[in-house]
Length: 316
Image 1 (cartoon, rainbow, N blue to C red):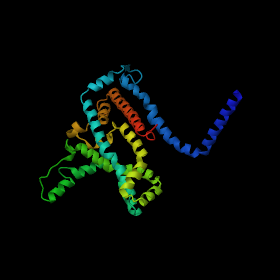
Image 2 (cartoon, helix red, strand yellow):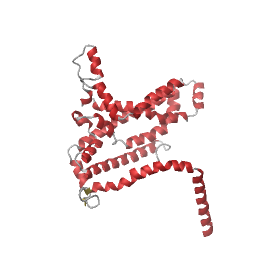
Image 3 (cartoon, rainbow, N blue to C red):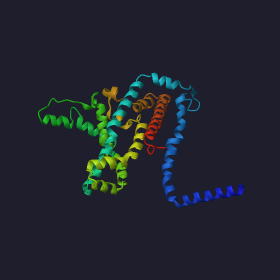
Image 4 (cartoon, rainbow, N blue to C red):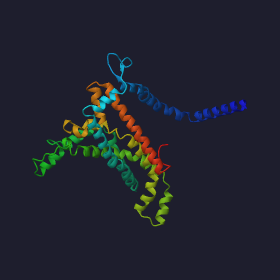
């Protein structure tokens, strides 16, 4: 019996190695990605311990005093933390409600374009902003919205409104809307890639059958295209909800200014200031760990709800 088990295990190992040898090029291509996550995501995880220590730069990481949860208690009572947390939630909800559906709608519209040359031109045009950094985009927005030399100011002056002054970049009332709109403009086009790939896998015979049954374009989209996109939408929604506290350091940092700190200071910028302006590395680590734990809970909760609604959806 023991020999049979040993022979079975040996045969199983040979089969595994045979599959690895067969797809060795694919495994070699995966090595850089695996190394990236090991070096930049797993090895630095020991730094999480800094959240539970009173870090002293002269004593070093390991010699610093262990203080348990004191950093978290201090963090939650610090000036500005509650404001940053509140702004993060509000901006994330805005992004979820307005920015998340936009690539879905855009993908459906692109799929309905029948002129292939025009379709490729539109796709290329909407993909390009994704590859432009937020620093450059902030410069473009300043050139358009500047209250003194901006394009809008010049246009208003051309039409006789020389005294027109509206500083959108410094408006507490509209700054969050500016963040959402600029994010849609930059990322919505590139976000269509996965949705268009999913639409391409939908059986075209379903559309032909729907046409025979007299279904118009809207009915085809509602009963064929959207159900075909359902799994992809749910998975991306889970990821999006899980990253709600990652509002976008690069975007906010490039666009905000002291006049709109009250409505634009988010956890990412708050952590940045703690770490690099005040050198409070222990508190910055505690804040980052708090954000990660909330994100984990959100991912698990959203996945649980998705599985309850539809057992074929979700991550696991």
